[in-house]
Each structure stands twice: as C-alpha cells, then as structure tokens.
Image (tube, rainbow, N blue to C red; front, top):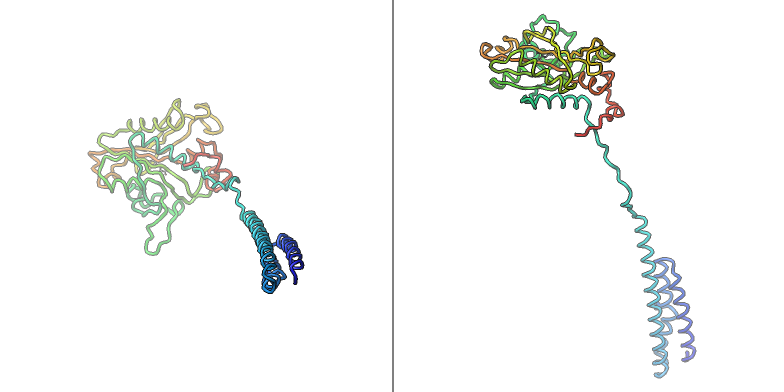
Length: 351
Ligand code: DAH
C-alpha cells in the first residue's frame, strides 16, 4: 500500500468511523462499533499495522495522520459514550421519579367520643372543686358490688334479671359491675378519711337496648367523706355542678329516692336548659332528672372500717351517657355505641 492509498483509506476510516460511533443507539452497540472501527481486526487496525512495511518517510507522515484519526475516533467514541450515559441516567431518574411536591397521605385524626367528652367535662368540674379521680375494675365481686353497698341478698338489683355474671370457674361471685358505686367501697378500703373522689367508668346491666337504655353505659360516681359533712354540702356541690354543666341560670330540685347505700337518698333534678322549666320535648315537665345522690349510709361507712359516728359523707352517681345525649343533642343512646365514624366524627375535639 502506498502513501496516497493509505492516506485515502485513513480518511475513509475517519469518516466511516465517526459516523458509526456517533450513530450507536445504546451502550452495547457503541461497544460493537468501537470494535468494528478501531479493533485489532478493523480496517483501521490493519492500516496501523501496515505502517511497519512503509518507507521511513511515508511511515512518519502516514503515522501522524493515523494518530490523528485514532484520536478523532477515540474522541467520537468518548463523546457518544457520555451522551448515551446521560440518556441512560435520565431514563433511570424518570423511572425513579419521586414528586415531593405531591401532598402526602395525611393520617386521619380521630376525635374524642361524645361520652369521653361528657366524662371529661364532668370530671373537670369536680377536680376543680378539689375531688380526685378514682378507679375500680369492671369485673366486680358480689361483696364490693352489692353487700358492702348495703344491698341485701334479696334485693332485686342482685337478680339475674339485672346483672350480667361472668363465667369464671370457681368464682360464681364475679359479675360485670352494675354501678360505679363499687368504687366507693374500694376507695374507702384503700385510704383513711377524708375522701373526695369521682370515679368515671363503664357499667353493665341486662337491658334490652332502646333509645334510652343500653346494656353498657357510663356513670361518674362521687364520694365525699369527712368530719361534719351535711346534706347542705351535698346540695351546694351538686348545684354548682349542674350549673357548670347546663348553665348558670339553672335551678335544681331534690326529690326523695331510695338507694340502699344512702340515707336519706335523693334524686337531683335540674331545670331544663331548653325550655327553662316550662316543659318541652326534651324534658317533659320542665325538669331533667340528672343524678341519684344521698348521705352515705352508716352501714356502708362501717363496712369499710370508717367510724360512722365521727365521719359523714355524701355520694352520687351521674349517667355520663345521658349528659352526653343532653349536652350534644343526640336523640338515641344506641348511637353512642354503634361505632359509626360518620356520626362520631361530628365531635371534632381532638385529644
Ligand atoms: N348507683 C346508682 C344507679 O346506678 C346511682 C347512685 C345513686 C349513686 C345514689 C350514688 C348514690 O352514689 O348515692 O342508679
């Protein structure tokens, strides 16, 4: 091959090679093009080898051109390589795309149950008066739920009609507490007087559900025992509570009622917040019976080891569900237990 031929061939290889490398569609075909254009068996490779058989002078000038062509081809390969890498990276980024500007999935915020809200309201009023919160178990024994509360064995509250017994082998005395009053007993057993406690909690009775009855419901029990506590103290405290719950304008009335664990026992009525005593759909005769109460029976104090000559006290029990229905205008107690989020979420308060 003479000089002119070699130079022409190199020129062809430059053009062909640059076109082949620049046209490679992906990394794999670029590698194939590189081998075809510059590999040992390529025409360019052959041309380089043929330099050896050229005259010294030709070899120098053709060799310089061959070097130049190699540099051009290498540069073309490098350029294509970075272009293809950029494309590949962009494809990867596109596939891996994470749009941080999209709003996330907000966790749904729960809201307090209307019964909880009512309980909190009631308990807040009492704690502001100096009462503390006490608790007791929902599964009670016969002694705490009945005997200690001066409920004799033949009292109707003890029959299967009203109570739900728990089937624990060897423990026929266990039942779901029928009233939070049992917490009075547990509290007095656990501490000496004075006692000022409220005990919110769930209670159970054998009831057929209807708009005003549920086999599961809630009460806030209260107990104050100290030296010199009178019926007047009870009335003052409960009047304060009734007004705090239903408005300063409310009036209260006490009527006689029987509860085995108090003597005398009473029922506290509050003038209706809707009609102010005139009588309406909510109250009937203008009064809402809010709670049962009374002076703690001396037998109950003695059952807990308290000296009934020295200490007196009052107790009361408020139905928290009923307060929730009245305060929030809920027409049916069963709605409180259905667990329908569409209903429950209307009480927007969050913890
Ligand atoms: N335990 C009664 C009930 O479930 C309510 C009650 C009445 C509680 C009078 C008391 C009380 O502490 O003194 O109907």
